[in-house]
Image 1: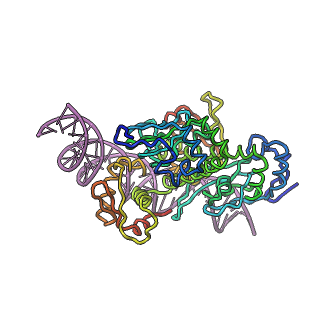
Image 2 (image 1 turned 135 degrees about the vertical axis):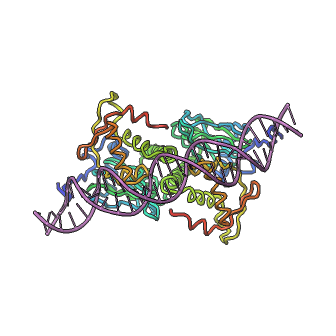
Amino acid sequence: MHAPYGLNIIDNCLICPVREEHLFCNLPLPAVQKLNEIKSTAVYPKSTMLFIEGQQPRGVFVLCAGKAKLFTSSSDGKTIITKVSEAGDVLGLNATISDRPYEVTAEMMEPGQANFIARDALLQFLREYGEVALRVAEQLSRNYYIAYEEIRTLGLTSSPSEKFAKLLLSWSPDKGNANEPVHVKMTLTHEEIAEMIGTTRETVSRLFSDFRRKQLLETKGSTLVIRNKPTLEKMLNS
Amino acid sequence: MHAPYGLNIIDNCLICPVREEHLFCNLPLPAVQKLNEIKSTAVYPKSTMLFIEGQQPRGVFVLCAGKAKLFTSSSDGKTIITKVSEAGDVLGLNATISDRPYEVTAEMMEPGQANFIARDALLQFLREYGEVALRVAEQLSRNYYIAYEEIRTLGLTSSPSEKFAKLLLSWSPDKGNANEPVHVKMTLTHEEIAEMIGTTRETVSRLFSDFRRKQLLETKGSTLVIRNKPTLEKMLNS
DNA sequence: CGTTGTTCGTGATGCCAATCACACACTGGG
DNA sequence: CCCAGTGTGTGATTGGCATCACGAACAACG
């Protein structure tokens, strides 16, 4: 089965390769089957906005392939990216459950696929499968903690370099505890990194230069090598 | 009935003067009665910390009298106040429900009274009274939106003056739409205001001076007169 | 009362990061 | 192949705000 943008469509949740480890994916069989019935799947090109900050919620999106960035903007064009979502993530959950406007915009960063579940169908589904409702509550609470993490980063972390170090650390897996170099695939532009840490493109560029000079990292094309995790950790204050 | 600190103790939720309009206060009679049984009440002096960021949650506090500030701090002493709570507010709800560490510290800003409900008793109570559980979910979702509001303020509002204007507006009731002066009682020190908008005490002092000079406000002792709401609104960009 | 501690106002100084301004690299398309 | 569009590196300049450093105002209290 083939689709535009060089993607393979996954239209059956039961045989989805990302089924493990995710809310709405890793569920008991009957629930997944039901979910498979009420969802509709679609393929989206890069830059599609799945939903926009301030809209009344229509439902949730379950990302099947591709990455999406969640961000909020002010009227004068400034924007902050609060999260980069990957396959398996559920987008728009809080807004949909509580029937308040979407608090962020979700935009595809690359071509991808997502399942849509309309609000009414979702609520009905949750009523039917109580254990899933519980997992939704847990997810909401997790989202809340993530939001607070963001508040701490924005409010307590003063300097761009500290925020940058924090971001780099958030990218390197915490296992592999030795301080050996970590290889990470970078899909973000400097502009987007700037929007994640609340600074400008130029400053991010200079941060890369500085950190390279200090032997903290290397960049070969789109792969990033983090050389010195311990030193990065010493730069934090939270 | 009298207590230290010049407070009257309220030890019966059924006849509490703040019963209206608040989660856990404005509830159906049987629920309030049950609540009244499982709660324990106590009077706290100024500066008491009801709970501290990072602690495992013991339960929730329902503020009966007095104000409390919620804040989070970094190891180098910087702190941001995320909310000033008043009588009727429930503190520590998200942490208690989800059994994660308190995400903020709650400190009394003046002598006051609070009811404590232990985690186990609360969960049992919620299981028993389903409609209350629903209201808890609503409250959690509301908290999430408030957190996002904070993220927007911290991340998108660049200048201290803009954040200050925003804060002033958040203090003035949105009714009374005419642009007549609004009188507000100010209980915060400049230091605390600085911690709310992420700047320094000195800058707040200068902001007051600037805004006075521009006829935007006046201060007589601890009462604040906001003179020109429309101009304040024009300073915002969100 | 004076003493002590907190809060407030304001000047002087310095620095960091936003801004402006280019030049260069890389990509995909006609 | 060139060309337009997008991303990247880096200098120069500047201004806003943190920081330091006082002194004054004010409250609490023995």
